[in-house]
Length: 143
Length: 198
Image (cartoon, rainbow over all chains, first blue to last red):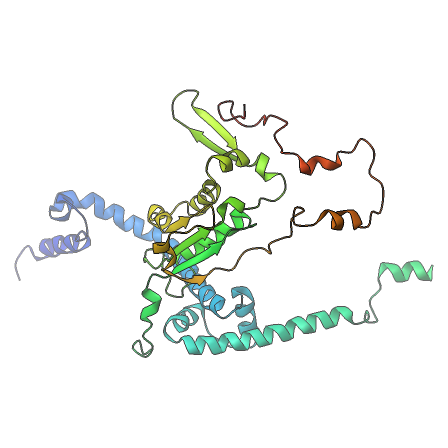
């Protein structure tokens, strides 16, 4: 083992972190010190932003797939979660690109279920007010 | 996941869409048009991927603004010299260039994107029904309109208007025939003097 092994490895590490830079700070050790330090700091700040970007990318892709089959993204996701279909956004986005027929069948199911839920909602509105609930009108009538 | 199972080469092709702007809100139309320009209607969408389509818009002369927007909605410009600020109402801009309002609406909608100029080049706007043959032959799809085309007062006959049931009488000082006149009586106070009607 050479005597300056640690020194060499330190420089190799530094060089590896600076390989994607442009100009002399890519090759010169002294010049790369500052930019590498800064890029490591940037890499921490970019993490939540990258997560957010990917999150929105998945939503955009699923929404595009849904629009092709005539259903909105929000109702699609709501139906899937309520029907206990445990597919995350990543997998749904992949299905919409690579397995369009699978995604279409999911959309068809969601459309049907969504219309059922809508009809149920309309039904509950038309039903009479259940007992045990006192509204302002009842109080006025009794007085 | 088998990537070779479905090969959708047509997805990566650049298709041409047509949109009829007759009696459509320019802002809501821009929302829909820019979706197709950016490729947000495709599941392969990526912000840095060049997956957008061409959109041909015709009848931009006949767009409709809601409320008082023809008068109150403003287009601004600054030459960056002192006193170089000017603004014009939407109807004034529309008289100058009938495609301008829809173009600006799309342009504003795409703000913050690096590829905005590229996307705007794929938007083809025509004031009338006259579309060049070399553009029209590419079109392979139609974008749905954002609102139902309403029936104008001009479309009704005078008999229909007269026979419409009146619930009450209008006061005598009420200006009933204003729709028959051209709306040029009042100078537009919000437009810069250079742009104002003489």
